Length: 254
Image (cartoon, rainbow, N blue to C red; front, side):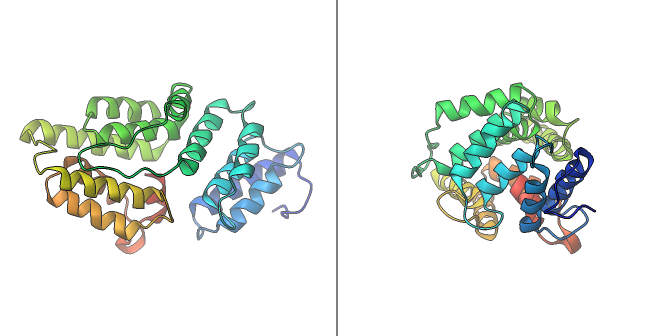
């Protein structure tokens, strides 16, 4: 394999990009975000792989080797835009979401959205970005708009195994809802508030992600009869980790 500090040929750069993805997602190796960023940097050198900027943007947003670096993320997204505009729009949406001011959710109400940021997400999805389509599918599923969720997951299914799994779970939930006619808000505002708080812990809004607390709150909401919480738990545990443990990479993707 090429060494991370060598000037890459195109083939070596492509290999470095793939190694970055392998270490980022733990595909056959332990997740190692520091190694992932090193390989993305190698792949992005002159003559390298344009999509390496997507890896660098992701690392700057999520903090592969330290705290998030919004300015570095923005620069990497700008470099990515000419080669992969849909992925650049998705990453810009992700960055906007991370840096947006935190608003406190009220029981029974949803947090206000950023129209410009949402336009980026929708543009990315319409232009073929699988992650954007998955995000919109999950949003629709949590609103119990299963027809819309199925549409977005179906569009992404040929690009992403995660989308295929989500599609299968949402189709099952749609059938269950049709059969049982469950009213998701019958338990009142407490279940909705617990679900929205779980999503903040899940997504790391306002602080580091806390998956254990997110799952506890999803379960609390589900026990009170809130169907979107049940749907999210179905998705979370549809792909367990080794020996039945929590699949952290899957939680991140959801």
